[in-house]
Image (cartoon, rainbow, N blue to C red):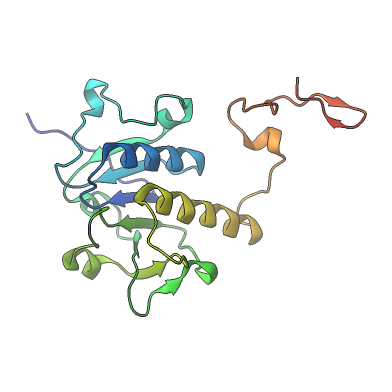
Length: 191
């Protein structure tokens, strides 16, 4: 029986042959935190079947991960419309620094594996190339989170997404901040 994969929803993240399930789980969490609806990955080193209810490490404590589609597939770009803009996140000559990068509305962010680079056939499919201005290479899931956080903040600064008060932004209770604010005379009550 052939597994039917969903249509690609933009923006999205693709991980090329990730090595560790915990990095895929943390990338899934980053997608949920920053509003992306799909996480695709290639290869067989991380193997789960979301249809059977199998889950990744690091997603168990967060309810928001359920809004992100898990899509293991060796040819994920085949599932996206022609308007998709594949963006390789890769340390390479002539890539744009994330600092000044203008995120395409229909971006599909492509990340290489923990133990290598994005393969050349994938690089030929990418339209844009960006690197994170860091002194060392980042962990895969950290790189995903940094790029998606930058996307959100850039869109907010450009007026493409609202800058919400904290109590409206959070989708779940966190520490002393809750979804429904209670104000005392000094600010947040935290109860």
